[in-house]
Amino acid sequence: MSEHLVRATDVARFYGDVVGVCDLSVTIPRGTVGLLGPNGAGKSTFLKLLVGELKPSRGQIEVLGETPFSNPRLHARLGFCPQQDALWEELTALEFVEFLLRLSGFEAATARSKGLQALERVQLADVAHRRLKGFSKGMRQRTRIAQAIAHQPELVVLDEPLTGLDPLARHATLDLFRNLGNEGTSVVFSTHVLHEVEALTKNVVLLHRGRLLAGGEIAGIRTLLDRHPRRYTIQARDPRLLARELVSLDGVETVKFSGSKDTSVLTVETRLPDVLLRELPGIAARTRAGIGSLESRDEGLEAVFDYLMGGAA
Amino acid sequence: MKAEMHGETWRPWSGTLDGQRLRFGPIVRAGLRIALRKKLPLVLLFLPPVVATIIFSFVVYTVAALAQGMVPAGLGAAGGAMGQALGGGQNSLAGDFVQQLVRVREMIVGFHLSTDLFSLLLMAWFGAGLLAEDRRSGAHLLYFARPLTRTDYLLGKFSIVALFGVLGSMLPGLVIITVAVAASPDWSFLQQEGSVIWKTLLFGGAWTIVVSSVVLAVSSLASRRSYALAGVFAFFMFSGAISQLLARLLKDRDWLALSPVQCGIRIAEALFDLKMPVRDWNTTIAWTSWALMVGVSWAIIVWRTRRLEVV
Image 1 (cartoon, rainbow over the protein chains, first blue to last red):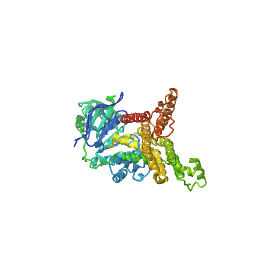
Image 2: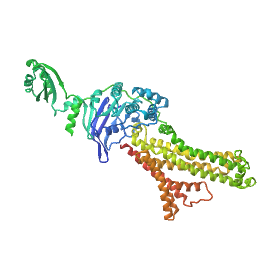
Image 3: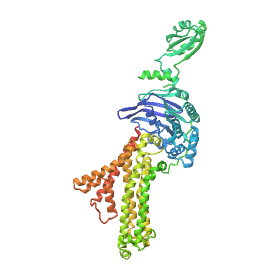
Image 4: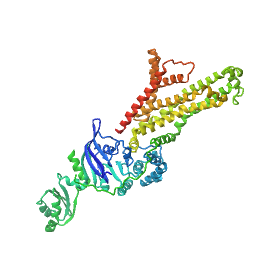
């Protein structure tokens, strides 16, 4: 039994002269992982390599301990929701899911019951017998997700799964992924909407122009980015007093004032956030500057992404 | 990377799969289900061969009945006239009995060739989109993320087209033969012309394989069903025209082998031993041409299916 979900070693995939992914080496443990990157970053290519739709031009990739390309044994253990609107319009939602379950090797009765269960999970049970050609974009997306989870795979790979969903459906789908994770199913999903990833997992793999930018926990990646100072905003009654003390701290690079007469905001950039956070209570007590709030805008995925993308551009 | 991933409780997959059965079966079922949902093309494409089968069945029955010196009830007085037209009167019919059976066989072959054109329409209509639409919509991503090999996939797609070919090509011929056997006295058609059955199966099967392969090859090359449909018709029409042109210009009828339809006519004439073959060109070349068409088609299909991974 493989300890890792994915292990890629120097994987490259070319489409003629076009680079899909290049020299990609990454190890992803079991759990929920977000695959991030702008359009054309190689996310879909990487996911197709994971599910064995593509063969690497170079390098090796292992998923659940097996080589994925043309490996029916592995395909029985994973579910894939592609980005493409690949539905057979004349089939009903249930027939569609049932058909793909039959391809997975399930008997007719089992395929039907599992199909219904999956459609219930994506809240499409009431339209299970309606033809797909009458479905909205969101319903079609949920149908695709249903076929990916219907056979209860170990690993579910989803390419932009939240595209086309309205806010309610988006929320429900995120809940579904969370539940899948809690049930022990590993989920790898791609997106370029950062807050979707943050809502679901702290673990990310960032791709840009086919190359791996970073991977791991968002906070951990942020720590590794010591090139970029961490930015804190402090709301204080008397920010000037506070600023005078803060500029003398190790690691502090800039201190900026902003805000109105009543509430002044101090923005501090430091390369040593630990020092700032350790010293700040003492400084506040000494200066009586009246600190109202302390906030870091750099901990989020968006900031990390911006930094990385800025560096990679 | 020092950053750590969080891990949930891992649950190994615990499903059971039947690894023995034919994986392409569900593809065929789903393909037929999709095809049968559109009623108008079904009616338009199946109605002519069905009507032709009924009419020919009646004609064959009539010829066989007249050969026995009987007048079919449905014909009434007209039966006598038909009997005269077919063989010169009831008395002489007994003497020409074997000849009448040969005529029945020739009618079956003629019918066969005409229904083959309908089967071409059927296979083109229902087969043109099978690979092209999968490519366009990205449906192959769903197929190949399942425990399905490319061979299973292609077998499934081929079976769908071939099934329509069998329905349009072989089945009507077998119906007519059944009528001829049932209408002939003492199973005489079966005894005298029994080889027509296996020849019908052989010819219908070969025709179905050739056309299905060409249709799938064109479908694999096209990006849309409509393009594939146009491509199939273009292939059959242009190959027919070019083969005729070359045969006339170069005064060598073997050039007719470039056309699958001409090959079919030549093979049918030779296979069913028609008395007056009008196209006296080499049958081996016709068979070889068919085999080559199938070979090239499958080379294209396999190549394009491997390329399906590149989207």
